[in-house]
Image (tube, rainbow over all chains, first blue to last red; front, side):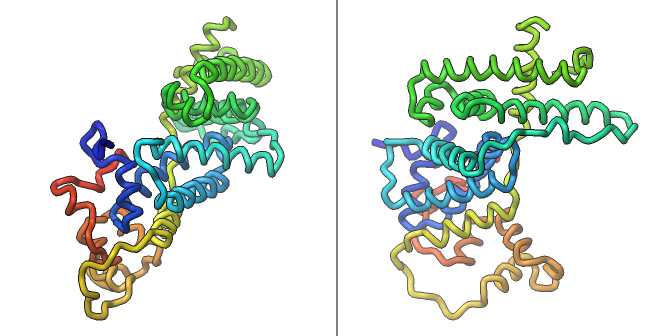
Length: 202
Length: 115
């Protein structure tokens, strides 16, 4: 018997899919509100902050969700697993179609022009985020997916394994290698930009 | 820099980035919802069709106090209000509905989301 309610006592995504397919417009709104933000955030991270591309991927992912709803079988896959899997593949397709753009986020960081208190801190924080985005863009696709899913999306290793359709050990290996590569890239960039003693907090 | 320092810095950086997800625009949410409604299988009709109704935008305007209250808002902004102030009764009125989930799960607030 498939549970219609999740741990929080709300209707599960999977039950909403069945309701959506039966014509329930409340389910259409509920699924839109639950799933779209997650897919958008994930796609933006995989695509190194390209907002327009991420929105296209999110809309296309949800479009495919609506189309699969009439044949959705409860108990086989979680809606989020399915959506993340589709979004992952759409992101990869887009990157391959356009060729890999080298991220120049660090070079494009704004100059310090504002002397008000807190401005420097904000710019440093923005620079760190840009540096992370650029470093992620330099990773091989599968390492980037694993690191984003694990450390930015907060997925467990079994969830990541289901999304990436690989074993849990492969996920752990990709995550570890991805993080080592990120550390190396960020250390290299920090030296180039003279960040060794900026003393920023986390 | 020691490897452990770099790892701690990276963990901090990742934790910071994890707290800053991109947020969907209202426009994106509207497009996704429009796709959902356009592709949705129609529920079997359980009630006779009501008397001719006002257009969708006029009905939306009525909920928020009529056209004068919404003067200056574009159509997208009005739909944005609907997404923000949605209630089951409102959506029933707006788009028409027959049997819905609320009848099968009385007392459940279907529109509570994690945000």
